[in-house]
Length: 163
Image 1: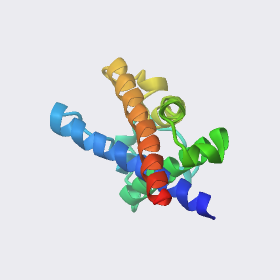
Image 2: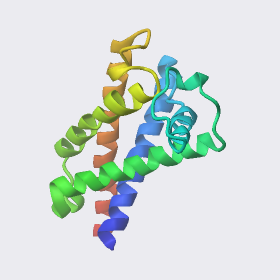
Image 3: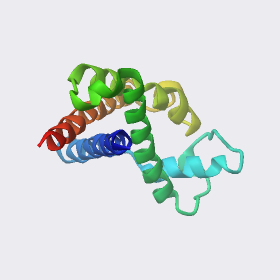
């Protein structure tokens, strides 16, 4: 039971680090953070059997799309923390190291490149956006920061538990 709570907190913490990074990017560089409402819209249309869109922004709004999107964002972050645990085991939870966390974080960019972006109308790896390479770079950076968040969250929690 302790491991489950630990993993959930690591996933939430890592996702929060990613969100703080998005706010910092916005303040420093004027880069808009991900619109989780659009992700919620995409997910909301799935219950009607529609999994891809030409442009998610032009799709009909879905009731509660912001809540759906933000909830999915954090549930997916927790899911990636579970994956980290499954790959690297319990020992990593209590003695976290940076490499596995950042490697997994970067590897998770596969999901937006091949599922989220195509489904929302941006094409594979943002190929249909005005500046695909910039979107790709930001996706990789965001997921690397998520990986850093996995590490930092595990480090803080393992320190607290050792007190």
